[in-house]
Amino acid sequence: MRARPGLILWLVAGPALAQAPAAALKPDPGTASGDAYGVRVIQSFEAAERFQGPLDGGWRLTARTGEPLFELRFVDHHGKLEAVWRDLRRPAALNASGVVDELAREGGRLTFRFSSMGGVTDAATLTASAPGTWSGELDEGGRKRAVTLAKTSP
Image 1: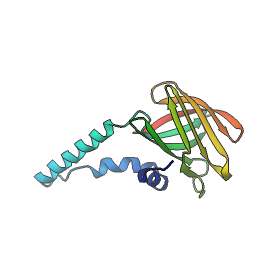
Image 2: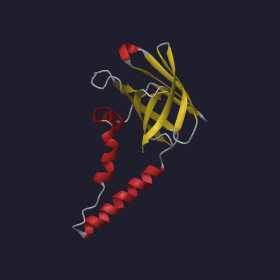
Image 3: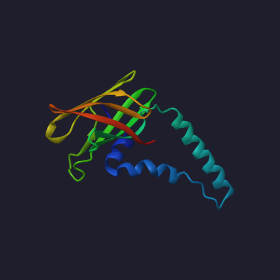
Image 4: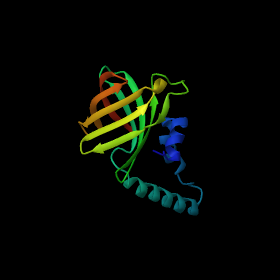
């Protein structure tokens, strides 16, 4: 799968990137043309956001014990899914982030697979529970544990 440049930038810049567009879209109150331009930019941004699916945005995968495991960023555009991941347990490691290799949503079931530490394949199988929450199992190279995926940002 080929990730979008924005997803790769998220790997480098982190979750603070999700807050950047809102600040950048504020119109310059000093000029009338700045106000009109700012309003048009905001309207265009909001229109583009309406095309995004329910998985679009930032998510956190947490063990049932409460331990944060991975941060994920999904792009859900008309049902076409892409994602990147970041290992929260190894924030300074060079190999602590990457692109999700396989990703599928079928009804209320979400599955994804990626390679993390030393080529170990991690696979999550989740079922939709409450709005903005999925629960299920994470298999980290044979080590299985119960997990929850919850939305953290738009």
